[in-house]
Length: 334
Ligand code: AMP
Image (cartoon, rainbow, N blue to C red; front, top):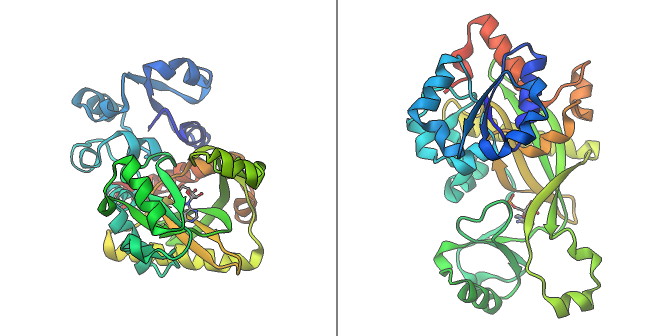
């Protein structure tokens, strides 16, 4: 079972391919979209807003269908974390307590540090800023609400105009380079970490800026947005894979210590390579990311390991199937 948004189609397809019956909690206004894919959906539960998924009626309905909820980015965005942690009766695939570590900037930085990831410098005060930084505003969503600056006076001016106080923002060194997002799957059943794919996000209008000559940019001073409109595949130089796995393994270990039982299933590390080829991690997601939608038929990395098309959605369903056959479902659910 999942919510109709983000990576729902892939999750449904993967579940179907593994022989499960599927349930989609669908917004009434999206019914016509998801009806186009009705082949993938056995039961549809219609709601006015995703927050309704936590209501006693919807929870009871989902329980009666013997559902397991597969969380994705829209669950995290539209349903209150406390509700997910305390009021959900339907079992959730993965460690629901780690979603808070994705949402909270302080916790996120701590987990990344403990994992041994190289992170961009975080500035504790505006006056320390001595290079190009990205300023992340509180409650920024969907890649909107960031700006780039390089001087303390410029940052103060912008914050004043936005009416945001200095202590509410997170100021981070801007990594000038190539962004890359690694999609991992950690299997508690096998104890192995798998690289399922990698993507880059196509972000408007940040990715459109490079088409403007510098003189026009200076004149027009466009407001920057990192709103994701789609994802594009990337395959890393093979020698760079070692560091990606080192950070992935580090996150798995650190998560077991800090948020037991640690990561279960999909998570993603999000970063950029600088001019020297150093990988800086600025974010992680503690559940499936939409960049995996590129690889519904499998990625170059899954093809190396599986002799069949393997998507993240199918990998999740495969793990649940195996756990159910081995009587170990509780190792995957919270
Ligand atoms: P996030 O919401 O943190 O995933 O960031 C949205 C986008 O902002 C990323 O996909 C990157 O394009 C960009 N970004 C965030 N942090 C940094 C950073 N420290 N250096 C360079 N780009 C960044």
